[in-house]
Image (cartoon, rainbow, N blue to C red; front, side, top):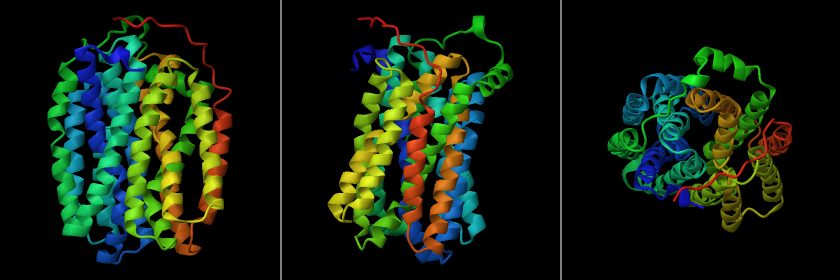
Length: 404
């Protein structure tokens, strides 16, 4: 599965990108653990805190095409360093925010922009530019697994820190962890091959974006990825609240998030391998369809610790494993010259869905007292996403020889 990554320079590029994503995604995907202690400490209300996190979901997506375009034009190093510094700043100033507007600035803007600038569009684009063709699919799976490993590590660690030194201390510790990823930027950008040149098919950034936005397959890909964002943001923000509604301890939520991350490590590696063997649109359709079935099964099962852990393991297998086939489809449709920008735009669609998933979940619990209708909406959207991927234009795969 990973033979194409055996070369030293290829491995360094891949693992460096995975390490950076481990930190940025680990921080971002663990924010739901802070909702309850933030509410207890500030008294701002779940809806207000959810709004700040929902804006963060949108901003994480909005920065992706901008960061991708900056990296495509000026190189990824400056973008990644700036992203990590801004993420650390957002975590560091959050304990000083005592209003809804303050949380929007720290969590909704700074933390989200920082983590977005150090996320998929820049990292996968930078790696693709420095890796041989046969290694890109497996590398995207490993990089994606790095983000999942971050969730597996950060969720229980931050939960323990919240319990031992309080949520403010946990936020400051998170800022320090973020800064520790800075040395990896140099390893990513100075290793591997020189960035690939594409003068023969370079029609310019704006023309490439306009061409993509007029492509039906690209828009269908956006529609499916919108649903993925809705699903993930709803769960990562409100799973702790769902656990609490079921009368279970907070540790069930943190371990469920960790299990999601652990399962997605496996799912991401398989997704990276699958895009080299099967058409990506079928991989995506199967992933989204499985989510609809899993949510339906969860609604029918008794709400015990084991139910949450099994549910988390099932969801985790496809959690962010949608990224490698989505990025692969963008590359197949339009090439990799502006992959950071074009994949960044699909991530923006993902996070528009994320905004709705996080915010509507907050409204649901505030106005109805539970998340029942959100689960139904999530299940319906997942089924729709499975269907809209099928008409995407994608050529049959051609075998690619793996170099020794």
